[in-house]
Length: 115
Figure 1 (cartoon, one colour):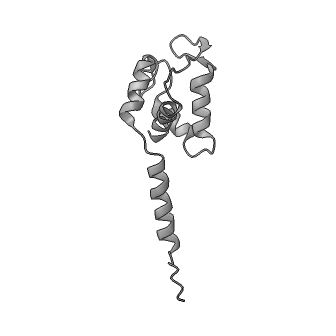
Figure 2 (cartoon, one colour; figure 1 turned 90 degrees about the vertical axis):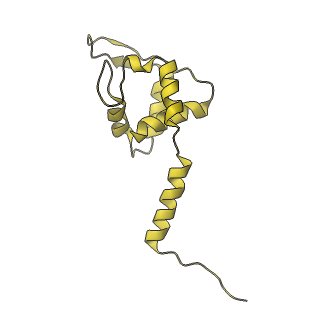
Figure 3 (cartoon, helix red, strand yellow; figure 1 turned 45 degrees about the vertical axis):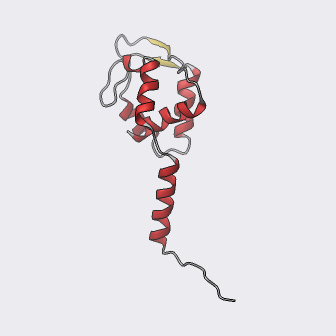
């Protein structure tokens, strides 16, 4: 009986793992923007610049690469933490994002992390 093991170089193996993980974390940017629009998120946030709240690109940079980054964003979007508004420096509860499925919420968090 012959042994047909496939020898993969570390570089090739790393590339394959990267490809698989990026496919598993695919983001539907249009759906994320739609959910954000439905929840009036654009009132305080923009993708690339600060408004009353920080830019989503800045939020994504803050959480990107952290083990609990996605979970921390989801918690923020669903728990109404206190946030300080830039407009008048007043602290108020962040609105809770309304969503139909958990996957929709995960997609929004992953979209922010992708920016």
